[in-house]
Image (cartoon, rainbow, N blue to C red; front, side, top):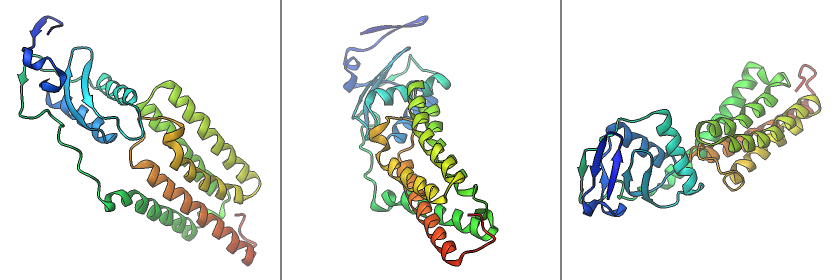
Length: 248
């Protein structure tokens, strides 16, 4: 197997030709980029061969995204941070790099995004109540606006323009609900927060966005659902108390 690498002609030993038998060594920055993308999407990479303009990977299909989207995220990262490649460095390890399976996540690790989401929702709502921010009826609709825009940000970071467009269309529905809730009743705002939590749960089935961190849907869902429940509880409490100073 021969490959022209710009001004250097590299001849790979025959035993290194199959992808699963060996790989070209990468510089430290290149390894960091590959490991960063692998860890972000919780993929297993058993072997790779890095070429001047493309890469061969022996890997499994990550949960939640397609292999093509994983490769797109990897290429976009390397295009933004071109690594210093070591084309004349070869080695055959006893096992391919990243061949070791990703350690299984413990129950505590799986539950941590939910716990943090619940904690932040309680903190935000409590802070708003203590400072009086929530007496302005624009506060919780603004929270809906902020929450709705995060998926657009993730699409810009790790996906293509059609994913950005899809995320923008989905976010616009919650933006409209926030505006309607501000103009009419805050019950719509509470419903918008809870609905976004449901959207978080099904997001990976609706839009394939490789820029979304693996922990984000669980974190955002727990925040949205609890925040929506707290807003609904505040509405019931203030209706019963009939507080005349509140425009909530």
